Image 1 (cartoon, rainbow, N blue to C red):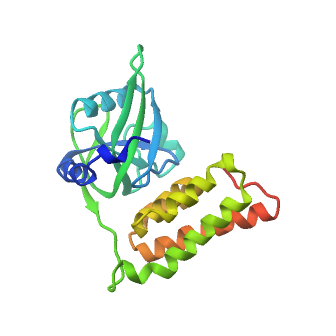
Image 2: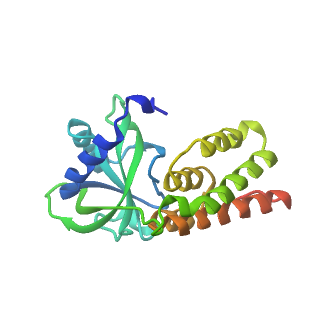
Length: 232
């Protein structure tokens, strides 16, 4: 993870708002990038190598969209899920043959509103930034749900070995001030099934998202207690 002290997230979100007028989209089967979390990618297809190169020459912004079906991976303009995770390329390594290793840091949820004609092999969309929805009383009204999720993460750390990263996740959860960010960070670490990760990114209501992620963590704990291995 890059040093967050040198990352101006407000500045990056402002840049993302500008980019939403013509946002580069990297569609993949079963992949969801959640805000606040880093995701590594190996970019090898020529069209996405071009997308990456163009993004690196510009503001480094892109969205990772989830294909509606795995069959879409071989299609040029396959249907995609309308809610996606947008972020910026935090790290990039170009290999001698033109492939890239990149690390995308999720910034926000976006709705892909309209695909734009660009005459390029990769896709661009007009998008809109999506904001979290809090209860009328604000984040203070989420204290009970936040504590429930933190308790589940602590319990998960007790049943998993230290090398799993669960203790570090519990520490991170305890010092994450935003309930929205907390739900996304835990989901990124614990929720592995694509449809459930998609449900997390599609949920704008922070209270419902906290409940959703808490339920998923509780399910993992239950499976571990029964001697079953959660699906990866």
